[in-house]
Image (cartoon, rainbow, N blue to C red):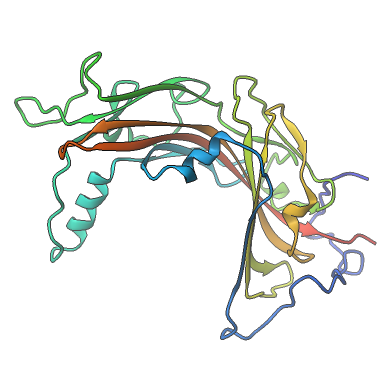
Length: 294
């Protein structure tokens, strides 16, 4: 039996694919007053470089390329130092206290990240190569515009390998008609373009917001994650990723790989300030979960 199953929406027969009779699974509800049940779990219990995101309180800055499904183009979003976020919030709320100035700059490959944000398509210089990240106290020229510091002037600088852009190869989706495949939860084979230079593995997340194929609404939310330690292009997902999710559920399988490094600078108050550089690529695979086939 194939580990994933494509079934045309026009040809689906509900007498063949029936509801699961496992009483441990949730039951649909129309009671909007019932408190939502939230389940979050990490299956992987070993060490992963991705844990740096959770184990460091430093500000996270960097970029993410995301594909909303297998046939969409990836788009890159940037997370800049919070000085920009605070300035934006102040502009939205004229009654807010003005933000404390933070003369912080952030550059990627010696280009100010704020300048890179005008581009939404991935750059070959950002993925599948060593990328230089630097954070520094502002260096303003005579015109008051922040400039990238010269060699050796950055106070926090790291070069790290950022893995290749991700794409899911199995289940294979070639066009819009293949979107939202029916996938059997046991021994689910997930395939992607391998990156032999990526030593961090990947993160896989299964997320369910309580909706299903039949229009039912469950007052539940499930998010279960695992780490794939070997970036070799294929794995059999742990069945437990789909625990608590019923037959026919509309589910997203999210695959992510990237790199994380930590650096610090001495800020304007003379204190050490930690920054976490994050660069990653992510693909979202929407599926219909199948628990029983007759």
